[in-house]
Structure formats: C-alpha cells, structure tokens
Length: 112
Length: 114
Image (tube, rainbow over all chains, first blue to last red; front, side):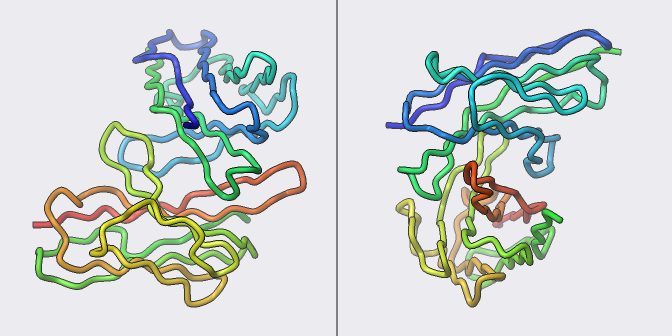
C-alpha cells in the first residue's frame, strides 16, 4: 500500500515567518514529488515539483527531498496571509504508472 | 500553458437526472483523470485514461461513467446519483517531462445531488 503522510495541522505562523510543511512516503520506488496549494472551495494548484535529492527553490518556496529518508518538505519564507490554504503533498511512482498518491493535507494559517 | 478547463462550474441535479461533466486540455497531455473531493479530504482517484484508454477504475459505482472521445476531452456521465455523491469533481491531466510525470488540475465542478 502506498502511503503519503503529512504533519498534522492546523499550522499557524505569524506573517513574515517561515512555514515548514513535512511529508513522508512509504513507496521507495517513488520518483516524482509535488506540493499543491488548495484554497477553500478551489481546486489544487501545483506550486512545486521535485524529482531529485536536495533543494529546489522557486521564489519564496523551497522544496527539499531526501529519498533515503523518504521525506519531502516545503518551506515558505516570508509567509503572507495569502499563503493561508491547505497544502497537499503528492507522490508518483513510475511503477504506479499514471497514479498519484496524496497526503491528507496540512492547513496553514498565516496570521497578520 | 497548463490549463485544464471544466464545465459546468456548478451543477445541481436530482437523483433521477442524467448529466455530464466535461473536461478539456490542449497541452498534448496523454493521461487524464477524474477525482472526487469531499470537504477537508484529499482528492480521491476515480478514473485514469492513458492514451484515450481507460487504465484505472478505482471500483467506482456504475452510476459514474467516464468517456474519453479524444486525447483532449474527458467526460463523466452521471446517472441516478445519491446525495452522498455531492462533492467537488476534479479533472486533471499529466505529462512526462523527462524527469517525471507532472499533473495539473482543472478548476473543478461543484456537484450537489438533491
């Protein structure tokens, strides 16, 4: 069974702080890792994808992947109230074909 | 461009109605998906089409019937739904960029079954 787990929320951070979101996965064959942001009532929006070990930065977002530890994280620097949303971690394995596995999501609130 | 479009945005239907949800993408993606999402839950996979063929059916009740007329279009036909089928229905498409498969979601159809 392929499981993706995210740190339990909700998570609250003050505006300007760093928000840290964590995700672990059980399938060692996983090769593609994603973070989606979902505002209430809206669809998931892809904000980061990472495929190799290490860090990947895009603006205020940094994704970190450690395949040995089966761990992927998302750091949001200088958090803004507009970052308040649910963040979904998703994983894809080539062996799983076109199937993506989602974590349950972490709700983030950035307090002005 | 990473746009997946879905129509309608909202749908209210009775349990005896027949309706269809539509999804379209023009990114050349060869895999398309239907997900169902309930409030405060992650998306739940329903169907996957790969190269216009149904490759995954996650034991979805037959009152949901998918159709992929061509590589850009995906439909979900609804018949005799139950109130518990009320949810956000998400269409997605994916492509392999060489480093891995990447998936993009449409805006969703909010379905209410009365």
